Image 1 (cartoon, helix red, strand yellow):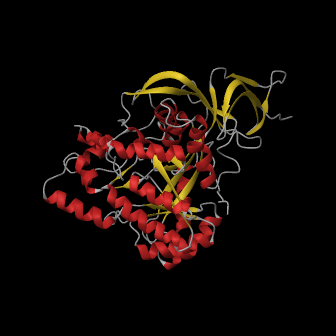
Image 2: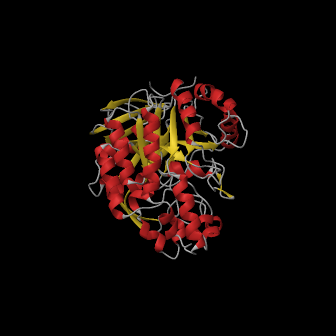
Image 3: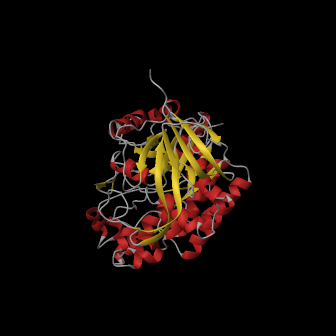
Length: 460
């Protein structure tokens, strides 16, 4: 007769979004069974967590796997990307599925299911991306939300790449999304400012990586976020600003929340650890991303926004392009694929730069990387918390382990690392995904293809 396998995690400090407690934790099958003194219990496997932290598995709601962009394709697919994620303590990712010209939204999700089948190590979901907002696509929105993809993204820039959606169409999209209990994700940069700046800089031969940042100033974010808040104010639905990298944009989001509007924002790991001076280096193309890296003063403002709750969460915005692809921008920044590989680095970097340096607390770290993304993106009933009945997605973390981050110590598929030679305090030891050990001391004992597609539903 089949018997549900059990695992005891003994003597660790369990960290939730509300506090810390030194206790044992029992896994039964795929679920968390209970906390408490388990010294008298029996289990198939024991994990000694004394001196270690027990965290909920991280949820990364912003990754780009198999991403086709600027003439190249990201090197993270559902095998390499989810493997790197698991090594980084991530047990759930949500990927973006860009609509191809004239393609139904449901087909974008079906395409991702094909890409993930037999390959994903961890659980995953999809954000459809609308690029062709025809009436037929608008009519599809309720169906795509009902199919478990309630968070739909649009770009306010990248006109030349065929991604940009005009404001009049955003209003119609938001109206349909709001009626169906979804949420609109926005890449909020003003295309008019960017196109004008890029053209002028290319004309004047200002083409090194630092001019990528100069072409996309904080004002471009501010103007776009102001328009996004106006959309939300119309009462049509919720809006989530992805990869916030502007202090004035942060102020606009915070003011909208005080007004009672459904406006939320994330920032990303790289904005918290790197500043725009990286773009002055000989290898500055490594750090070309959009929005760009900012001044240290803005970086500090983002940390304050994380600590006080004005920023809801931190994602990786993992966009892993090969070094050969990044070199397309060696002579002209506008030809460089925008993005940084970071799905594995997020949790360790946030602990090292945030908790270890006193910028955020341990419970706030858990909220930023697990609880809030699960709650906001429709997984709050099963992911992001260490509660009985929830999926046993669990990270055993060594807070005292010092190591150097870089390509040789990470598992991401890119042949370069933006995090090269970064000194880090805190390291992931063991990762469970739905009760199965997927990372054990730096190796992956799990089989690819075990990850499941997650149908998501937002709370009203």
